[in-house]
Image (tube, rainbow, N blue to C red):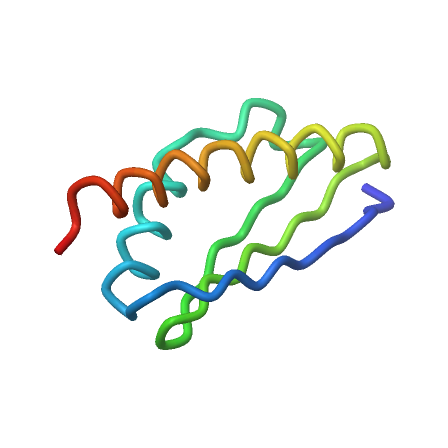
Length: 82
């Protein structure tokens, strides 16, 4: 796959929130593994998401979906986390 890549670094409020976010986001399966690669990493309070896709359009779609899912995770932290 000739990949188009992007890396997002998202600061979280704590290392715990970064780790929970990583585990929650990793649970979603990648449907077209031959076209998309998503790798989640944490470093203290930073959540890093590395994307690789076979085209700009696919990359845009998977990044948008990931941001929407992460928004839901953060909203849960706001509502339920101490």
